Image (cartoon, rainbow, N blue to C red; front, side, top):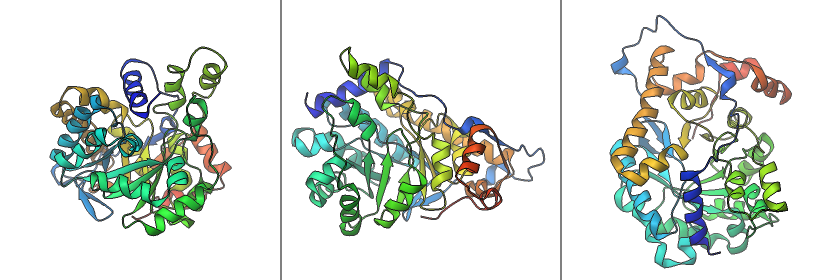
Length: 359
């Protein structure tokens, strides 16, 4: 099956089937309500910078699609909305556009309609291992990107019949791109999370940020269940549906090593605020924007507004004037997430006192 056709399959599955995994870890986080916030709601400030580029809220629409003619309007609608709202977005894996120039416009349309927004390019580590820095440069040039995400999706690859199953040489490939590319490199998981150990490894390679891409959002093993013919491979994909590190766990693991973009099961502004309170710099989500993007840019803007208003209301109810005040506000952590913090031997007092790493 061609890469382009596979991309359309993924979109149709995500639009029509249940594809999410269980438990993000945010279930174990509770804000301490402040009944006397001493904040003027109108003065609350959500503006942040991402690699020197200002955004009106700490929120991105995560990598989703591109690579098939039917995805052109989806990316166009997303781009118009993020430009109007003053936030940013990523594109889906650009492999199809690099391999077939006839669908490159399904990616480049994003920069055309979002000339001022933060936009990141997106390529898979298997392609970087095989093709090197030139592959990354083509992806960046295609959309005039502000940063490049190298995605790690080996869980999906091993349950996909046509998947790339060799990860050998990954560190060297990332280090080459991070050292030679003129824009920042982000390492991005796609639903199974990034551990503390890997965060240290990619920092050594020169990576500038992590997109946690944790468990609890779209399960790409789950998506492949709908594509694989019945038999052993489908059963195996089903078994790995909930594999991975939950998003909140990954944020806790990586927050003091590299700046964290929190993706994976963030479904409203409260989730996004919890991610930032745990130490992320930016929250990010994809699946909730897919159906709106099929419809119109106005529907995408409504959905962005839903997330952003939720974040702002959390700030008000916790007495925070700026969104990064959440890094110092009180949160109650219980359950498996607290056990994870103890298991990882993270100093709970230090974690509670300072929970972020600057871009």
